[in-house]
Picture 1: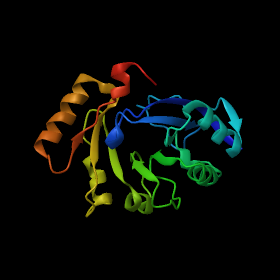
Picture 2 (picture 1 turned 30 degrees about the vertical axis):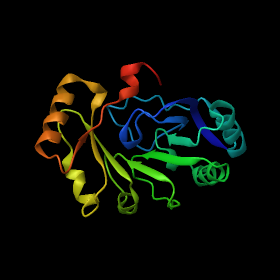
Picture 3 (picture 1 turned 90 degrees about the vertical axis):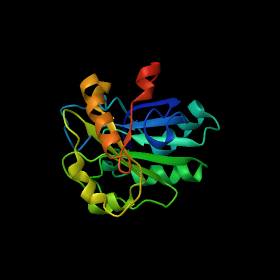
Picture 4 (picture 1 turned 180 degrees about the vertical axis):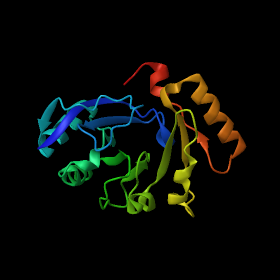
Length: 192
């Protein structure tokens, strides 16, 4: 059984896939306690892998993209079985992770890593994109963990707050070969 916070159908509001319809499976719980976290990842229910795949079908129909998020979705023991079942159901799985839990992932699984307190080197090496949260400063100390990899690196202003937007924008403009500005567009249009 997996601990769930919610499952919903919306559009990806962040990163390289912004604007793409997706079913979001928010698994409950997290192994970090970030003071700026804006997500309710509290456990609301429990469901089997089969029940979650059925819910994804019911909510998203033929939508190919499923985003596993949290909290930290990879912290749950059955997350790998869920990923395999979603892929077997013809879904393109994307994972939003803090990168602390080392899990082997198939090549076709998209991994967004947003490092906070610590980072597993294997997850940094596997990441398809990086999301750095700008909260009063640009946390560019994480870049060394991803060195030598040409992957999109988004600076996401915490809470879309104007001061954080300003910092992120200035850093992106100063280092255009390194950073992209990554706003939470779903919040601007009022969808989950």
